[in-house]
Every structure is written in C-alpha cells, then in structure tokens.
Length: 294
Length: 294
Image: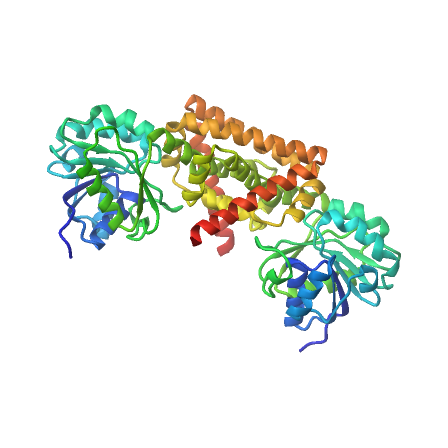
C-alpha cells in the first residue's frame, strides 16, 4: 500500500459522511491514524463497536491536536460553534475542510476563525443516502460521485492538491467552483428537490384520514419516489435550507411561478403549454442519460 | 392450461399498457384470440413483427366485432371519439373496459355511448414505466400492482368478477372504488407528483446556460429522481391532467400553500416548522416501508 496522504485525521462529526470517509480512507490506506469525534458518547461507543476509527474523543478541541487533516462533518448549522472550539488547537500547516452542502455559509461561519498557517478548503461531497448515523456509512459511498471544492483566493496549491487526491483516491470525481455559483447549482439540483419532496409528503399527510391511508396503498405511482428523497436526515436538511436561504428562495420562487403556470394551463385546458412542459422534462431526462453514457 | 376467461379480446390502442396486457394474457392463457388495434399502420406493423397479437386491425369498429372483451388503451382524451366509433359494433354481452388514469372523465365520455347489453366497467391499472410504445410492454408489468375498478351502480356482478379474475391472473391486486374518490387519490399519489416533476425540469431548463449544464452534471443529488418520473408519455399525461382537472387543481392548491409555508419558514429562519415538515416526510416513508413489509 502507498504512503498515506495524511498522518492523522480528526473527523469532527461521525454520521453517514464522517464514517464513510473513515471506512474509505482505511480501505485505501490514505490516512495514518483516524480520530473520531461526535457530540455524544453513545455515537462514539457505536464507532468503537464498529471498529472504524483508531481513537475516539468526545472533546473536539482535543480531537484535532496534532492532526494534519481536520474534516468538519456536522450539519452546517453547527459549524460556527465547532470551529470556534477547535480553532485555537489546530496544528500549523494542517488542512481544515468540511463536507457541507452549502458553501457560502461555511465560508462566512468558519472562515474568520481559521488561524494563520492553517489551510481552510471548503468542500462538498455530493453523496448520501436516505440513512444516517455511523452505522449507515460505507467505504464505496463516494465512488463516482462529485466532490466540489470552493477554495478561497490565495489557497495553497499543494494543500488543495493533497485534499483533491484524498477524495479522488476514495473514488470521487472532483471539481472547483465559485462558492456562490455552487450554492445556486445545489439549490436547483438538490435543495429544491428535497424541499419539494418534504412538502408533498406534508400535503399528503394533511389529507382526510381515508385518502391518507390510500396514499400509502397506492404510493407506487410516482409518490414513492418523493418519499425516498424525503427520508433524509432532518438536522442536516434543516441546516441546509436555513444556510442557503437566498439561492433556495430564488429557485423556489421560479419553481412556484412555473407551477402556477401549469395550474393555469390545466384550468384553461391549454394542451399546447402542457405538452411543451412535458416534452422539456423528457428532453432533460434524455440529456442526462446521454451524458451518463458519454 | 385452464380454459381462457375471454374468447376474443380487442385491444384498442397498443402502447405500453395494451401490449403488456396482450403479453400477460398470452403468458397465462387468459384470452383465446387477441385483436390489436392502433392509430397507425406503423404501430400495427411493429405489433406483427413482435408477434404479440393474433390479428391486427386498423379500424377500431372492425376490431371489436365478435369480441367478448374490449379494452380501451388509448390516452383518456381520445376515448370519447374511439367509443363513438366502436359503440354500434359491440357484441351483446361483451365487456367494455379501459385502462385510463382518470375515471370520472371516462364515465362522462364513454358511459353515455355504451349500448344496452354491454357491460361497461371502468378500470385503472396503476402500472407503467417511463417508456412507451408496443415494444416497451412486458408480461410482468402488472405483477403486484393495483388495478382499481370504478363500477357504475347496477353493474353485472358476473361480468365484474370475470374482469377482476383476468387482472388477478395477470398478477395484479384489485380493488373497487367510487370514481370521484379514485380521482382524488390518484391526483395526490400520481398526477401531482408527475406535474411537479415536469415542472421542476422546466424550471431547471430555463436557468442561464452555465447553471443548466451543471444541472446535468450534478443531477444525482435529488434532481435525477424527478427526471425519471418526468420522462413519461406526453400524450397520456396531457390527457390525464386535462381530464382530472378539479381534483388535480385542488391538490395543487394545497401543495402550493404548503410550498409557500416552507418558503416563509426558510425566509424567517423558522427551524421548528422546517424540522416538523421533514419529520412528517420521514414518518410517511417509514409507514410505507412498514406497509410493504406487512
């Protein structure tokens, strides 16, 4: 096995993503020693039971001592607090990164706290499942998935390349993007679809009892696809929505206008408008399939 | 093999559903002779090439002659016209049924045209894929899927039982339902999810070019699930939306209110409201999974 890319990594937060990083890094020998940190002793006991870290540490400030890589894996709403606790203890020359789905908020919350001599590189692995917790992780989670970096101006090239190599060796594809652009793209491809999925589940849940029961019976016809998305981790998604507010509200406004236009076409029997909308959906699906094959 | 349930069936419209009925009926020996009808010679040539019907007939009026089962498998918007053409040629004692996703409109459009002595039994197999055309059909399409009957008052029990047996022997589960209730339930479990999926594809398609390209690159994070639904047959879905207008607009109005409430919670940072919404989505997902296991 090759020389590890990092000698000691502290993973702050050890749910689906954190535990998958630990497993993938181990599987490929990418990190010398892995320190797991989580908010509760119960989670750390689970980590020890699973045997997926070299050491567990309940205090994030202690977890990061001597680490040349620190990965923040908590919901994005907790990052400001966590960063404040670890900042004084970060080793000079260490790389500090995260896995949050919003990047402007992470830069806003964490950026000002990073000490001189620490390489802060915001990152977003676009991978996940509907399950959460350390037991939900697996080494292959990042295989063929994108990891987006939104480095700040002046970021050290060598540090960025090393972090890039870590993710690529865990099976991911990597790209670099401006943080505001990242947040807009994720608002439409991920945050809005999740918000819509949660919402339609609510709409269904508020129907009168008989109809509600039958929603479950007959869910296979489209609705079920929405519930799969809607099963994702609540803490994570609450924080994503609240921390990508501007971009999400903008996409939501566009979507709502488009829904209203469809409603109007249905009301007035505008077959042409409806056909065009459906045709565009198919076109996007086809483009997706072609892109995947290419 | 058992005695067939019907001696001769005319399938009017021969796309995904029609051709799947033909294949499933053959696989289980349920129909003596299958007559395929479609709007174009090209489709019928394809049917002959696939060898999935005993006879093809371009004129629906001729196709139904001597048939003890007639299944209307066209988009629901075409049913009034088709019913008018075949009505004078239906055999006394024949069963006339359909596969439309809207049932009040079918009863409105077809009901008044049905001659005395013909058993008209509206039906809706809740099965489909994102593909269409006779080549997309397969014998197992209805396995474990629901078929809903919305019989009119006074429907002949023996005729209903025979049609029920046909669907069950093709692998489906069957239920009976009041037509208005059917249309409301399908509006929320199927029609609204499809409308939303088409709409979000439109919203994405109307973004500026750079963001649009990246929607395709990063679609895996939620958006892709919507595009799968959005790839469904345009003619079918246009007709469904226009023929379940009242129920669809009602569900759409509820959904839009719920979307606006979520937007408001995001704007004002109402974490509690967002958490509750997400929790309800998870609850529904869990109920679905338990229901399936039960």
